[in-house]
Length: 222
Image (cartoon, rainbow, N blue to C red; front, side, top):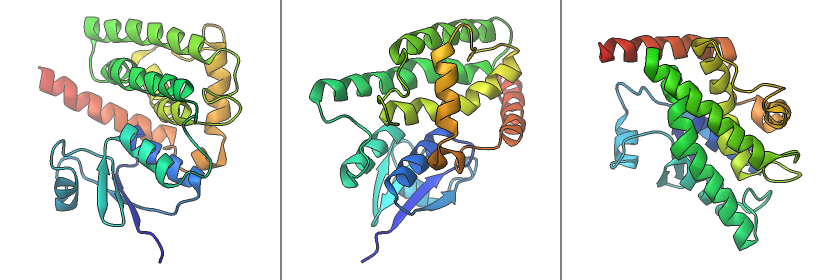
C-alpha cells in the first residue's frame, strides 16, 4: 500500500522547505498543502492544536509538528540516506547546532527584516556574531554532516535564502567570502543540490514577500 505523505506548509517558510528537502532527499513523494497564515485551515488547526503553526507532516493520517522534530521523524521512519549520525556523541552535537540555529540564529535573522533603527542594528550585530560561530563549527568540511548533506545542513540551509533577503533589506553582508569563507562556499554547494534547488523559493519573489511582511510588522509596531 502506498504511503500517504502530506506537508501543511508555505512556499516562503524555511521551516516548511526543510521538511520538503528532507523528504526529497529520502526519495519520498509528498503533497504540499499551502496554508494561509491569516486564515488557517481546519486541517492545520486540528493537526497542530497546540501551536497552530506550520509545518505539519501528516504521514498515513498521523500528524507530526515542529520542523526539527519532523526531520528526526523522517530520518527514523525512512532510514535510507541518513540525516543524523549514528554515533551518539556526533548525533547530539548535530542536535545541539540545530537548536542553536533555531533558538539563537533564526530569531535575530527574522528581526532584521521586521524591525528598524536600533533594534535592527542589534539584530544585525548578533546575527553576524552567530555567523562567525557557525563558520567555526563548519570549518573546512564540505557539509556540517561531513562529506554529505545532513541534518544541520538542512536546518541552516533553508534559512540561507532568507539570509540573502535580510542582506538586501538590512543593507549588510552576512555571508561574505572574506569574513565567512567556509559558509560562503557551503551555501553555494548546498543550494545547487538537486534535492534543494527544486524547493528553495525564488529570490525576487521572496524579497517582495519579505518587504510585505516588513511593512506589516512596522505598522504594527507604531
